[in-house]
Image 1 (cartoon, rainbow, N blue to C red):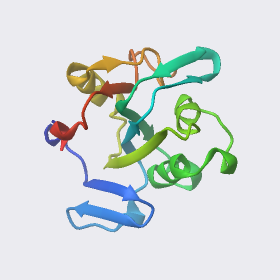
Image 2: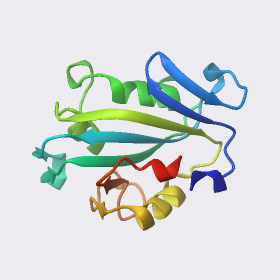
Image 3: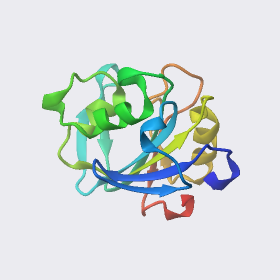
Length: 161
């Protein structure tokens, strides 16, 4: 599905030290773009998501889409993703995704970086909405008109790769 988009490169980011790169490039040059976090939930739990209130997360996979359009510092795509990988004790809870990731039952299992100089998260979110098993309404999209930036899949969403 993502092959229809014109990215500078696509990188599957598995953890802080394990990168699989598609196309020849220098990882340190990646500054702006869109990213997708695939989060596995093994046991059902309910989490308070800031002003959204309590949301129950059922077992399966959740895909979160975000963007980081900064050229330097914490708002670059690589630094934003590294922030998501840190524990809640190491960061201030700020975004909806921070509330979800602070629960020990929510584990990031894959990360897809999509470097781009233009913001693509809403366009990709509309495509993810078509293939998701369920939407988590209003999650992570308070700065746009999307219905959500968090999508639920019963099985690992391998059709994206």
